[in-house]
Structures are given as structure tokens and as C-alpha cells.
Image 1 (spheres, rainbow, N blue to C red):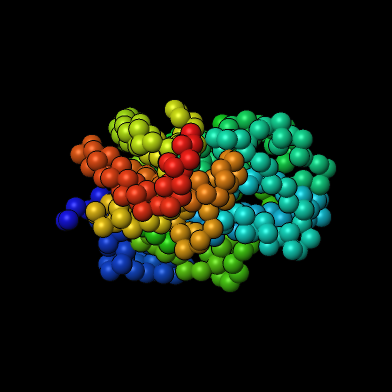
Image 2: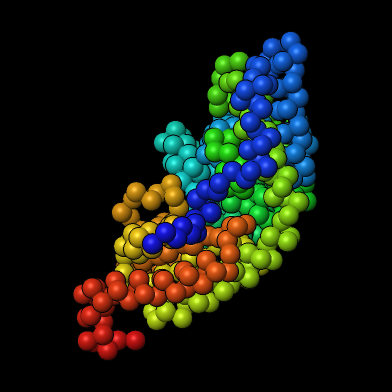
Length: 394
């Protein structure tokens, strides 16, 4: 089988040729250190400024509010630890959710060991938080609310505008991990009352190893990385110039073509989901419609293991996932699927298929032809499925 079908765009994306083309000169011709004062350095400093402008424009921020990082995980760590340190005299309470990316969850666990009180909001069966739960969780010690914009596993888009409005009315800072959202759905930090926002370039056809943290003007935040005076004294380390150029170009392309791309993605996503749900004893994880990321499908198949599905699909040339790429080495079921109410046995049989700009209908058709056969083969080998059939259960 020579086919190669990539269905894991939520994990990472390739770098688009237009992005690579803009990056290349900054590896060779324009290699100067932006902190120097000679002409070669001024060229790289100018490139960083242009990249910063493009990122800011994409989320309706000011350029002075964008700070480049090594990726989404650093941005999440900086936002949460930086606010916790800067506002610890005001309070020690942070609110987040049970379905956050581990960059947020593990950061909160770290803070909990260092005197902070963390509240983890539950979600409903589709992955949504309840605004009333958030309001009831707020105390006079609450300094930060961190809720992801869109879930990386089940595609749920949270009510970010309502969360932002509530936090602003209570004078509490609001951070959102928007790694899965930026470049894929409209994001407006001003309209949504977002105070801090994390993003990562490799999720929208930019390079890996580059991200950004939006910090609303006027907010106090402690540095995460100390050293030189780069990023206006906020984030030390010589700038990754080529990647800054790349993230700016990638985001510019993503925002420009977003509406057109999403129409195609939604069509293919729905075809994929509806086709897979025809397989007996399956369930869709996450919501349907516009409150789901355009390219995200997540299905559980009873009586089989997700890892076995992935291995057999890989043998057919299909790259997919059973959850977050950051936890793919874990034998535990997805914390997100458990949070929406699935039992371990069902959560273990999850398959996440995330499509992208270059996904074709022919590829979707091949997946729809292949997956049912894989599931049938695995179930034929499953003693659980055999027992289920013998008992005649529903």
C-alpha cells in the first residue's frame, strides 16, 4: 500500500511552501542578531516586527501585546505561572477546567504544590463548561480563570465571549489556550475580553518551535525566562527570527482563507463523521455543528482498543490519533473522554481524525472504506465482543 493519508492535523501540520519560502533567507542571508545595531541586524529586527504585526492583526491585538515563545506549552506556562506570581498578594485561587491540555493541567498541579488553590470546572457530555458553575466558583481570592478556546481532542468550542465578559465584570484575569483555535476559527481578543492568549505556529501550517503569548496592555506578569532584554524585557533569549517570519506568514494565510477553507472542512468532517457512525456500536465524542472545530472528528468504537486501530490504519497508509499527541505514549484513557462521562472500556476505543487544507474527498472516502473493515477485523478477534454477542446485549 503506497497510500499516505494524513488525518492528524490537530497534532501538527506541515509547513506550507509559501511559508518556507519567506523563512529561508533568514537562515542564510539575513542571519544577524536582532539585538545588534548594524545593518544586517536591523534587517532581522524588521522581520520580527513584521511577523509580530501579522500575529497581532490575526487576533485583533496590538503589536506591543504579542510576545514570541517556543510554542503553546511555554505560552501556557508563562501565562499561568506569571500571573500567579505577579498577583499572589491579591489571591491564590485559579479556576480552570478538567479538559485542558496538559500544559495547563500540569502547570496548575505545580502551583497547587506551591500554595495555590485550583478549582477544576466539570464539563457536560459534549465538553462544554457551564457559565453558572464558573460564576459560583469565583471567590474574593480568585486571580485567574484559564479555559481553553477549543478542545484538541473532541473539538468543543467553549463559550469564550461569555467567559470573558463574566471575568471582566468580576475584575478577574482571563487566559485562554487558543492553540487549536487561532488560524482555524475567528478569534478577537478585544471583543471576547481575553486578557492572555496562547497560540502555536505548527497548528496552522507554520514551523514547530514557535508560539506566542498575547498579554493585554497594562497587565502585570512575571517573566518565565530570565536573561537578556529580548521581547521588550519580557522573554530572554535570542529571537528565532526565521520561525517568527514563518508564524506571521502562516497566520496571515490562515486568516485570509479561513472562511473558504472552513466550508470545505465542515463538509468533509460531516461526511467522515456520519459515515463512521454507521458502524455498529459507535458514538460521537463532542458536539455537532458550528460549536465544533471544522476539521475535528472523534469517534469511539466499542470492544476495540484505539492503539490497535491506529496500528492497522497505519498499515493502510492512514495517519490518525486516539487523542492528544502529547499523551500518545500513555496507556491511560483520555482524561477528556472520561470527563464527558465515558467509562474506561469505551474511552479506550477512541479514534480522532482531524482533516486539513489539503485533505480531499477521495481520501475521506478511502478512510470510510478502510475503518469499518479494521473495526470488524479487530472485533472478530475480541473476546469482549464475542461475549457481548453471545449474551445478546443491546
